[in-house]
Length: 433
Ligand SMILES: Cc1ncc(C[n+]2csc(CCOP(=O)(O)OP(=O)(O)O)c2C)c(N)n1
Ligand SMILES: [Mg+2]
Image 1 (cartoon, rainbow, N blue to C red):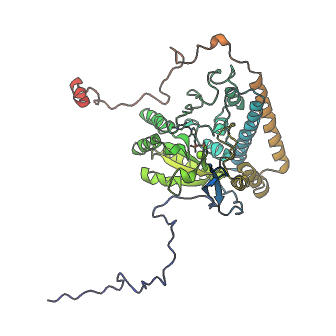
Image 2 (tube, helix red, strand yellow):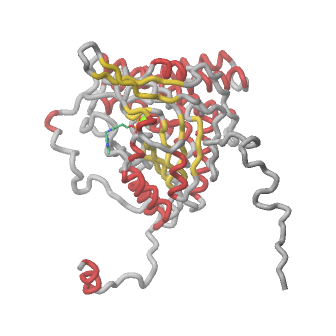
Image 3 (cartoon, rainbow, N blue to C red):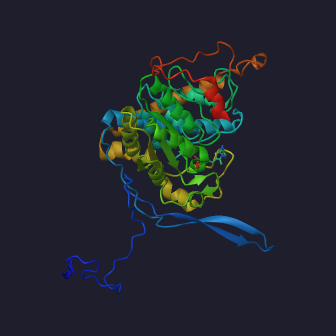
């Protein structure tokens, strides 16, 4: 019996013309997966390298920025979670963060700082609102741009200032001139690690330790658009992913890694896309919008508490100073600074609270600002007046000595399944061969 060829109503060709006449323009930004983008603006700026020869034939490299530099400034997105009081508190921390760094720049110029100073100018919303999303029992590990996170977690501005001045009352008693200190007692803070990316597996380990003690906690840390290129970043996130550990990784996508623009750092469109490769949720937020940063961080923290694993948050913003105080950032095209200055996280949040929401009267705002200035001035005084460490104390407190600090389970005794121990020596030996 002959089989009749079935003609489908929806044949592969259908009625579509193939001469291209009815074809719409392909969308090269089309994603076949979902990465939520909470931003209310997607800047289209890009940086290109130009090589010029001078009259002697020597080549000089400079960067140029193209795109819509006059784009209107986006509003702040209303938070799903934050109350009026919480918004004002975050705003206050952001002001403390900024004014502390201005004071630090001044003491540096007065020759009182040992070594360099790092700034988080333009990144205050990212540092403060992310740390604000943590619960007291959670852990965090800041990097150089996160001096605001320290304030939110209960450190005083004088702690950071004294640390830079290597004073006797500083957290490391003058043993370190920058930010290498933690607090395993009160504030659950792991010290920054200068080797970029290394904090990620360490924080995954902290979450694993808590899990063995019967608790799912959130462990938040930060990595830059440059630092995320390191191999250990992959290893750390992947480990957290397969173990469902509560890592909340804030990728500070601030367009520069020292003098390398992000266009020369990675080829994918958004760093949040990396989450797809790890098999974890990724989200993009405007890093200059405290509400967006908080909401994404809070969702990630709650996911961590439920034992569902890590989240990658890409906070897009701009590093508004050089790498550190010694770097004038002359390689950054000036129009880029102008563009992002209009997106200042504090000025926009102030406008949101005072003018849009009317949660803060102009007078209350002025009082809040002068109170923050008073606090910073007091903290600066404390820091400047702290003595330098006694020279004869120099050999102490560098290495961990007996009884210097006790490391004990914080959340309970580790739960170990019975009957898993007792490997025979021979098995280990065979394995090693
Ligand atoms: C593994 C490693 N490589 C290089 C450095 C030197 N270094 C310190 S900060 C920095 C740039 C970091 O840029 P990014 O990660 O984008 O952070 P940002 O400074 O922009 O906040 C470099 C190259 C380092 N500390 N560790
Ligand atoms: Mg960077």
